[in-house]
Structures are given as structure tokens and as C-alpha cells.
Length: 217
Image (cartoon, rainbow, N blue to C red; front, side, top):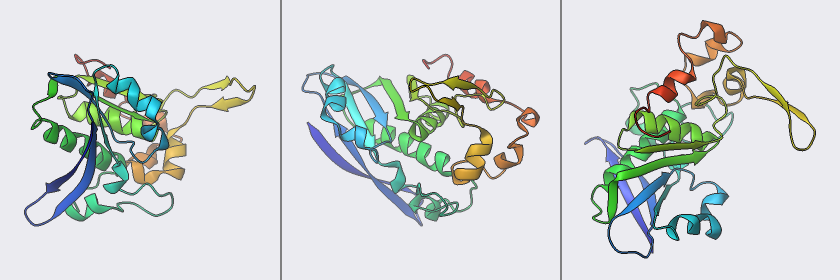
């Protein structure tokens, strides 16, 4: 069962809205739900991917995080509808996208068929960075399941690695310098000053992961 909803949030003076898609399994009673902000990626539309959830009695909740904040390289910081409402805050796009997860959970709390004790946040790559941050900030997520976050979430900035990949090519891990150069709009304005100087960071990403405890990561 596919249902689409429009979520309105924000302040009395200004509102921001985005679409939430719920794909519900054909089963009676309450069901767990997986929330994913990657509706902007092709894999979230794949029938086999979706059926892995619904065939196992799990509701899949999708939204397009780029409705909240743009994900366009070299466009600049703070582009998108979310910033028009929360203009007094200096968060990057990851923060705006993570906010969307919580608003979806707000909506799910009004659905009588969702088991609110078993909500999972997930996403892939930059969507995984987002899911991780959302899971730290919103304790209603019983399971935080980021997939391949690279730098900016689960990989410690101070640890740089290289490896021979399956195709025989040596590749290195993503670094804070990479984020600062290519996607500075994802992160806070103070982070780029630690690029190439990760040892000066007051903390690293293992602290972020610890903040999920005692929930499942």
C-alpha cells in the first residue's frame, strides 16, 4: 500500500513543507518502520529493494531530503526551503536533512499501524551521514543504520586509510579536507579549519557513535 503525505512544519510566520511516502506492508496490526531520506536516489524506487521491507512486514518511509536543502556542488551554502524558515541558525545541509527524519517521525506518531518502539533511520553515503546525525539527535530511533557514511559521520577524521579495491586499484578513505573542498555546504562553518589538521579536533566521530547508546547502531 503506497500513500503520500505532505508535511508542514516551521514557525507561525514561515512554513516549510515536503513530501513523505509510506509504503505499508499488507499485514494486520502494528508494524515497524524504516525511515530513509534518499527518495532522491534511484535505489529507493527499486521494486526489489522496497519488497525486502514490505515482504518482511516492515513499513518503508521515504522522503527527498533535497526538498529541504539543496545538494548542488558549488551552489553555495544554505540553499533550499529549510533555510528560508530557520535563517538564524548556521547549520549545514546535513543538519537540515536530519531535521526531516524527525518531522517524519512526528507524522508517524499519528498513524495507528506504526510500532513506534521500532523505528529505524537509514540512508546511503551522504544520506547515511544524515541518518547517523538524525539518529543521534532523535532518540525515537531505536535502530540507527547508516550505510557507507565515509567521512563526516562514522569514520574517524584522524584515521586515514588506503586499500586495494576489488578492481585492483588503490583508493584512500574520504577525509575532512575532501568534504571541505567539495561539499563544505554539508557541514558547519567551523569544520574546514580542521582540514589537514585533524589532530586539533576536540573530539572525533567515535564520540558521535557513542551518543546512540544504549540504542542499536
